[in-house]
Image (tube, rainbow, N blue to C red; front, side):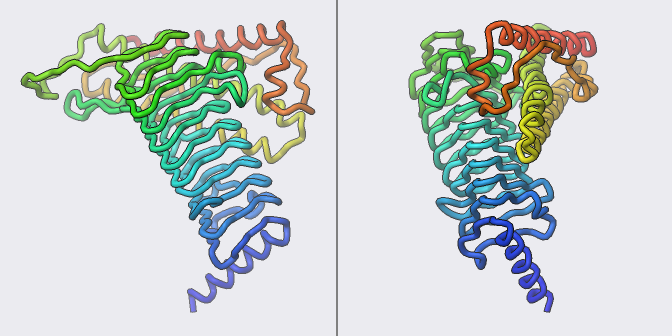
Length: 387
């Protein structure tokens, strides 16, 4: 009897969605969990057979397509207008409008894709942010990475197939995940005017490292060192055969200072991105009277804050093991100062068109503001948490 009631409830929920204009190609092969708010499933979205929606946070934007190439499970994730999920599993992720997750995607907590960012098949992401138009090939696994770069939908940062970000080292009793890596950055990357980055496939990157705008790394290597702007970089591994034990590793004060500085730098970029969304993107969505977009922007802020919390947790776990000062968790509640420059918001334009068309004086004012946010956050971290 209980099964029959559940089936009837499902039919009722699906019928309500169809009545408001959601396209469900085969109602018998779609599952929508009772906690999903139907008001957050927008008109014109398409649910293909094998689609499964769960979680109170889940939102499917207008004309978004879920499951175009196979079964797709969306749990507590926000999918913006015109975005596409080919197939796979997404949990606690956020996709902005026109982003695309390829077949057999596996996106976990802390995943954010901005407009036109895309992945090919079999890509796993966690605590990772792909900024505007960043493109990933197939068979990739990224955790604890932020990637930006590129000037347009055609001139974009790209990562070749078969790439892994190695985000764990076995030092000490518990190991180390205080290893986030940056390809590009936020403070320059948000303006969509930087050289694209190319990371060749069949490769790995050992965090924490930074890759500069315009950098190129040939395929088939493991990147262990940071790469400067506009540099072609290749490394050859050294052969090592010696006695080793993770418990015998020691961290000097200098070494820990470097770890601290890299983590604070990464956190400062996340902080700037959070403020950009809260003060710039939110303002434009309000002026556009776009309630749906405002919800997506709010979801992106949630994801960025989740990434910041993860970084503090991972650093503190390492610091505690080595009896070093912890990052004060109050930095997670810190707000940036208000952007007071006079800006022509041009709400009639799409976001990317507006960015490209910002006047020189306005662009300078915005850039000065984000740079000040970065420096202020870094100083706050250093004053609150001396190593």
